Length: 234
Image 1 (cartoon, helix red, strand yellow):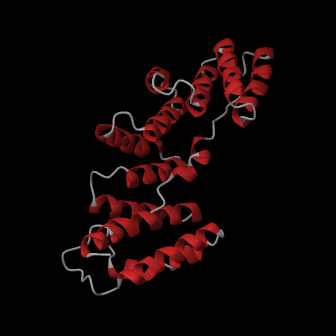
Image 2 (spheres, one colour; image 1 turned 180 degrees about the vertical axis):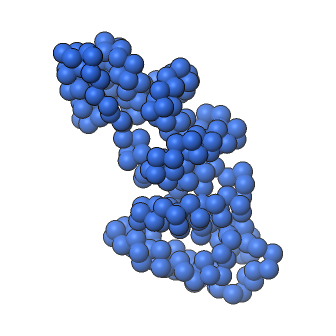
């Protein structure tokens, strides 16, 4: 691997970093071990495997992006945010660490901060799938239904059979007590994905809601849970 390739592997290095402080073979081996430990569910050692890379390049993009993800799935949310912030500082226009940090904030129910981050992402990429999905989810929970509707319809216009967005759109109708419309959407989801757990759960809730319309059971779709695997891994 030449010097240019090493920069891509490690990320943007600080001006004071030395390329000979850690060899490219050592870097590759560190990442190899980290990914293997992750596959085994050993997140602690997945993080530990990158300690030398991080010590050598503490402000680099790649290692902080990776550590942000690993810290998040380990439940170390403060560490995850710190790593994602370092990645953002290294490459301010990069979307990956912003998406990762947004997921951490949503998990901590810091929805205002997550919303701010979502709009930052959408300034860079107006049609970003995950930013739009997560923003629609937050707006629904905040009962900002008109804004949530616009986002859902915007993405469904280009992903008309996307079951995740369809489920979120159905959840939005459910939240507004639009029972028939919600039911129709969830039934459509089951045509596309017969085993869809969320749609089946909502259809059960609709049975109760129609019997007692004055009481709408509070519910959330699993955007934060289901999309954890889409957090940046590197």
